[in-house]
Length: 430
Image (cartoon, rainbow, N blue to C red; front, side, top):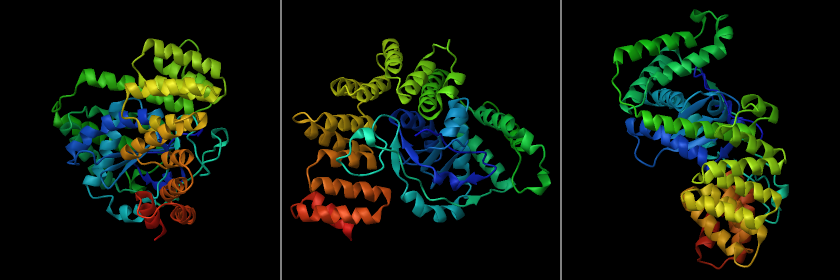
């Protein structure tokens, strides 16, 4: 869980991204969805069809598959300077889809993307490798990669068209197209030395300086033909700084965290990153003290209580962890990952009715966002038979056919014929 997400230059799209794993985090996913939904509507994508996937890699990247599945790399999230610039990146990638540039890649990637696994989560106890519900959370380990893919370089014309379509999409969505300028200026800082050695006439894709000039010209031609909401942008920027801090705290070294957030930096993002980093290093007292400072400043923020629940869980204070997670869910009722985390702690505490409550939480979570992690926790909460079915579903979502069939057959032997789980297990054996 220690490293970040991939690379966008869009000078070429690297689907090598999928040697990395996907991660799951309610706070990050909600903000990303808030940022990209206006683009989806402007592109004519029906409501509730957009899906956000977060790729765990250091690269500066994002891409869109089928117009609806948006893959954003943690390296992009931790490096990009504003939510508006992030929207420009997604608008460009949607531009490739609108321009028909993805057709040749789509069929090649479709099968692997369908097997993409959400097997890591930011938070305690949710990195799952095994699948044995008797495992204690303390011995869980992260695992899993997604098959490597080939790379597709877009031509100079395709990149220009995608940039132009992206600018048009930003304006149609009521977003500030200057996010494109910000992105290309940052990319130019990152690549100027390398690109200065390249003969632009000998490559089939445009250099960053060329793309920067093109989007500036395009934006000048469009004029101020957009109406952005300054107050909303400021609120989104505050949220964005928090999710960046969260990712940095979880995925970067303590040295990097301290370099990015100085000792005297007492802002909420700095406290958040340092609290998480301290927890990651086992310094629970410091992590808890910083988290309580955040809660004192913002008692309405559900994700600070989520972090407190993570910390108390690591202490082994299950009662306090459950109280914190329940408070988080009280403030944010649509949070499937936090429901799964609470269910996990309930299975660890294992007081009377705890596993019954855990089952109900997992069912609610699965209705909103099916995840292998939730099936794994469900298997811990269920008795034999039902537990075998949950494990079969867990392995099925991971693309592990051998273990899917193994546990589905076990479930069939133990479950009553005609029950929903019996039927589901039977379908997994076919």
